[in-house]
Amino acid sequence: MSWKRRVNRTLEGITGYNFKRAGAPARPAATPRPPVRRPSAPVVRRAPNDAVRPPSDPADRLLVAPVFVLSSVRSGSTLLRVMLNSHSEIHSPHEMHVRRITVNLPTEPLQQAIEALGHTQSDVEHLLWDRLLHRELARSGKRILAEKTPSNVFAFRRIATCWPDARFIFLLRHPLSIATSWHEADPVKRPMKEAVTHTYQYMKYLEEARHSIDGVTVRYEDLTADPYEQTRRICDYLKVDWEEGMVHYGDKGHGEFVKGIGDWRDKIRTGTVQPGRPLPKPDEVPEDLHPICRSWGYLPSEPE
Image (cartoon, rainbow, N blue to C red; front, side, top):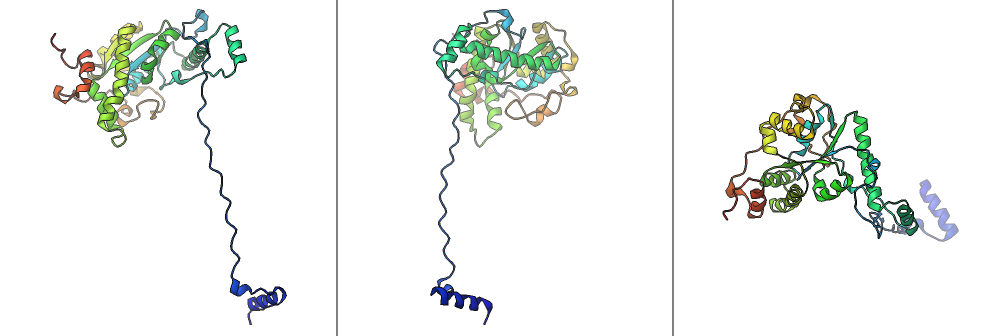
C-alpha cells in the first residue's frame, strides 16, 4: 500500500471523509476587482472677469519681437523652421504648443487675489507663455525666437494681443497638396474626404489672419524651388543679414524630428531642401477647396 493511500485511510478513519472520492476541494471564487477609474482631464475654470488684453506694462514681456510662422498642417513649416534655426541670430525650436498651456483659478479667493494684483486669468497665462519661450531663447544664446506650431492659426488674435510687437510669416501651400499630405501620413485613419475637411479649418483661419494682421507671405512651392530667394525675403522682413547656411540646414543641429511636434518623415531628415510635389491640375481640386485656392492664387479668379 502506498503512503498516499495510508494517509487517506488514516484521515478517513479520523474524520469519516473519503478524500479520494471527494477529490480536491474547490477553490473559492475570485473576488471581482472594481473597475479602474481613470482620472478625467482637469476642467479649467475661467474667472468671471477674465479678459484677453495686451500687457499693461512693457516689462511684463521678456520676449522682444518674437516671430510666429502661421500655416496649416503639412505645409512645410518644419522645413522653414530648420532653415530659420540655421541662422546665427534666430532660434526656432520644435513646436511648443504654448497656447494649450492654461492657468486654473478654481476658487473665489484665488480669483480675488489675482484680480487684486491687477491681473486677469489670461494675463497670468500670457506671463507663463512669455517666460517659457524666453527661457528657450535664452538657452539658445540667440537673439530672435521663431515659433511655428500650426495650430497657432486658431489663436492668432490672442498671440498678437499677448505680444503686440510680434512678427508673422504666413506659409501657404496648395490646398489640395496639404490635404493629400495629411491623408498620406495615415491613409487608413485619415480618408481623403476627411483630410479635406480637417485641413480646411487651418486654411480658413490662416486666410483670416492674413487679412487681419501684418506679415510676410511665403509659398512652400517657392521655398523649395528657390530657397535662396525666399530666405532672403524672410531675412529682409526680419531685418537680419541673410546667411547661406539657412539653405544648407543639414549642417546644423535641430534636435530630434519627432511626430507630434513637427515633421518626422524621411524628406526632412535628408538635411537638404527637397523639391515639392507637382501642383495638382485644376480639375483635380475638390469643389470645397476652390474658394481658398482662388484666394491663394492657385486657381484663377472667377470672372465678375
